[in-house]
Image (cartoon, rainbow, N blue to C red; front, side):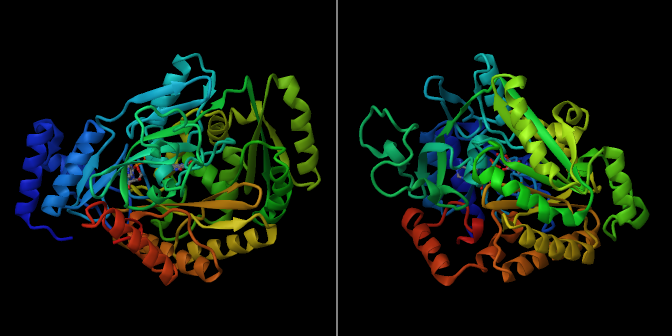
Length: 509
Ligand SMILES: Cc1cc2nc3c(=O)[nH]c(=O)nc-3n(C[C@H](O)[C@H](O)[C@H](O)COP(=O)(O)OP(=O)(O)OC[C@H]3O[C@@H](n4cnc5c(N)ncnc54)[C@H](O)[C@@H]3O)c2cc1C
């Protein structure tokens, strides 16, 4: 969509008249700030930013965009670091910053255990509110930015680590402004009545489940969402095992699977390699020596493990219970289970508290937002960061094969192999964090080439990504089957006939 400059002027002028002068910002500084991101492809300055204060405002913005054929890009809190930050799918779109003014916690139901939030409610704000109310309820958080928000994260299929890890799965009931400007309520909310009793408690109501359409897409702008909460357990007791060798991943996956299939361990397992954990503790010791041209050599990797107190692979999980004594037998059972390997070094909850990257896991299992993992962004200087997110079945041999492929591609491009496999019963998402010097052209190009080769190689083995940086949305959409692409475009035409919402996002034009 290439709207002429006059169309933008008319659009912004309409918004100012309808919503007030404060609802629009086109200053150079704002445009610069909203275009910034951490990806290799460069910044994407928008045409301007608009700040709605209500669902009606969002409708007015979408209608004006239709009138003037101006592309919009919604963000909630805009902390999608490594995946696009707050920048739009292409430069020149108008960012709708929903979070600035629509940031209210609309409801907390402490009997049914849910909250209803506007787009701008951050993990930190929700956590603070639950603490203020007596800390009886726990929210599943990410280990990313505490200022990230529940709504935007769920729509991007983000996840955490407690039993409520699946943020879209544990959302219930949305209010959405479609591309036409109409408002749609999903689930039980679709009932055409003013009083709604089960909107945020019943996920599967009459008719098709439309909520999923608004994840990783560009079909609508979500203005309200229900989020389920977990009763806060009196005690969260974590356990950790460090393994000495890269190849131990095979055995680890085999050990984790039965504990998740039976749901004996209630949290997901965080199975992180040495560099994923050590990477948040300071800059790569090799960076200034090799000028970022090679992966950290094995001897330096071993030295770093010792310094930080972690292994080549590290398993973390947690139990919940009424007291430390009550969970102790469960910890013992897990110790016996991992002890069978003869290689696992047990790290207790108390010992882990003194190892900062393991404290990040404890926070994640406890529903406490924390900043620790953001240290990964400083592993190499220059502010570059992207995430490659393939997965593996919980099959040790396959997981190890994927490790071999991933390691060699990272080495080929002089990148560091930094991975956390987040393990459920049948599947693990492999979070590969790539930190690179965005100010160094060569390194930036290598990071880009590395991502593309990883995507191609994993796809050729039948593995797709779970989420992707904006730079690669079109490429990944190109990896899908034709009928999938046709269905995505057909839905786009039906819900957003003029294509005003985030054209190109997730490769949907
Ligand atoms: C070190 C580190 C660790 C991380 N750990 C995790 C982790 O554990 N789990 C995880 O999930 N992520 C993680 N992330 C990734 C990311 O930072 C978080 O997912 C973050 O919460 C996403 O940003 P946000 O919540 O501000 O969403 P936003 O940036 O507001 O939204 C994300 C995208 O969703 C779309 N969107 C947002 N709001 C709307 C709306 N109202 N209507 C329609 N579309 C909308 C937009 O296209 C937007 O770009 C991590 C990042 C880093 C750097």
